[in-house]
Length: 317
Image 1 (spheres, rainbow, N blue to C red):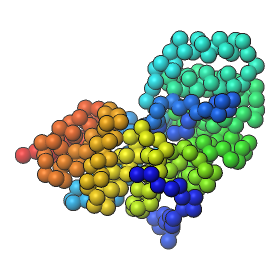
Image 2 (cartoon, one colour; image 1 turned 45 degrees about the horizontal axis):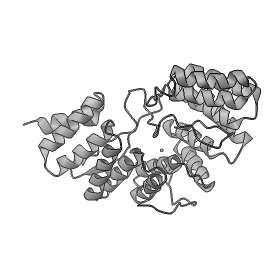
Image 3 (tube, rainbow, N blue to C red; image 1 turned 30 degrees about the vertical axis):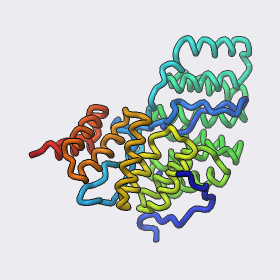
Image 4 (spheres, rainbow, N blue to C red; image 1 turned 90 degrees about the horizontal axis):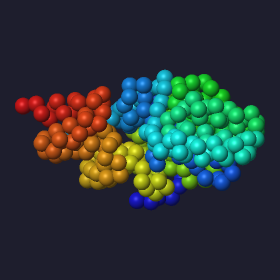
């Protein structure tokens, strides 16, 4: 379902007061060098980011939680991007143009996508040394700092990118994610909202704002944001999982099940998708299928507690 992009946020209330990660970019082409088709951030426990819901539906807690601020983050690695063949071709460009900051930015992005974070950091450092106002390189370097666990340096780089270009949506989204993981929810919400006000076409702004709405129980708004994220990035499973959980929290089991199944079709190696599907099977009383789906989730991520708990529950008796 495609929905219009809302620029003015609906009411947002924090408790007690009355949510795989930025994409490295190349400024020369305007294109975005994504580390993966859909980046999945992982917390220090090794579990992929999932979605916090306080709701208990039909006596069963939703198969979801939200990671705390990690000491280090990784992404799904695209080894081909960091391969010697690809890096060699990008290095040849640098050798022909050793003073070109954009060449270092592009190679740094390839290193980052390949999980070679230290080398990526060096290239972004060089790009910034050659072009101190290269705001995309600051935002890219911030992402690498986050993956290496240096959240303070990441924040400084995001702030610098925004200082250099106050209309740079990717920096707001990256900083917003950093704030969200640090539980600075109001600041995170404001950054995602700013990116949306800038008419971003980056699905992450809507997805992450949806996570915040969802964590506060504002599922109607969350569903709308997840739907917009899906319309902007149709091959990303994460917003389908997010929307499915909000559907489930509002009692719309059929649409939730359809979203979880779509998430699995898009990427069948995400534990949360299988655990979410299993939860629906379990709610419907189909313990055999639930156990099978929980088992698949536990196989993909043995540390994912909703999967292991669900498996124990459905195999008992």
